[in-house]
Image 1 (cartoon, rainbow, N blue to C red):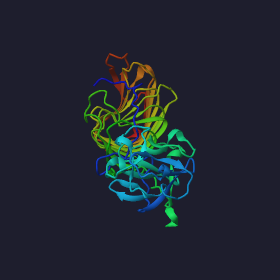
Image 2: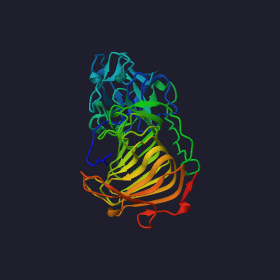
Image 3: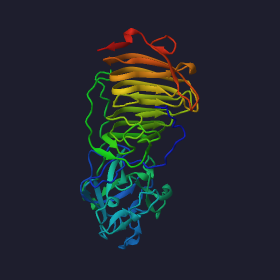
Image 4: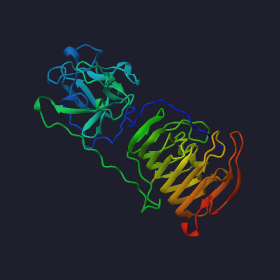
Length: 421
């Protein structure tokens, strides 16, 4: 298959992470709270302003947009939280109407209003941990309850917006009328890579849940809680499929299982960390590394990939990819430095603690551009080419294989670095 180029492609989409039983999406930049609030009456206090969510003028009408106002605990500021499938219903106590997104929209900036309760996904909210506060995340579009323009003024309108760490997208709950202790979220402990002693030989994990994605998710720091994510692309090797996740420069994605269809996997737009990510069935590629900076660093730490019929990791940009404590099964190449992208870079890969089963090649590099591949603590079940050498060519041509094996210049390893079983 022709080595492809992804640099420059962007999809401005939302981050959404969690599948409702009804089929909607629920976003969670952090793991869901392990101690969710009990059913009951609460006021919602904005962490950025210290003001409370309210129905203005204690209105009982449909379609009235919520605001933030000075906390009084009075009518219009008390909401009844009731656990439902996939989250909570949030109902204004004085009116009996539910908080929902106008027109059941999934767009950023859409009003959050009170409306007749229907039980639909846009009236379902998940409370996810954000330090000592919660994100209040809509079940239809995966966006967070937010104050318009991040205002801290009384009377500012409430809306939904993309989830991030801005304080006006965080909320604390106060039990109404002193009816009980205020709930405090307890984050789920971070899951450490399953690496079987650091050589990529650990057991394959079991998903804690399943999430279907409709669009590429833009993330900076994302913990998937070991859920399985799927739903983009055709599950095969066709070119130009969209990625499941785009990771911002300097970002981290961790504790994720990716299932078919998985599109073009993960795109790292700059330096990134991919930690404890598992591909049950690699689609077009598992991950593509895209920065044009020679100082870019990409770390794949823990995890594994199965069924990458062409290649697993595609290096289109510049910089250095480090793959450690990783296992690869039934794949073509574990790593390929692009041999015919429109921009030619010097690229480097380091593999340390990798176990390969039924995989043809560990790394393919372009020696004429000064690429290097270094190997340490590699275990191969059966046979595999450790390092293939190519002559990189301009876009539109096909790179030519010119050799394989250690040479002390580009392919760097010794017999003691490789164990065959």
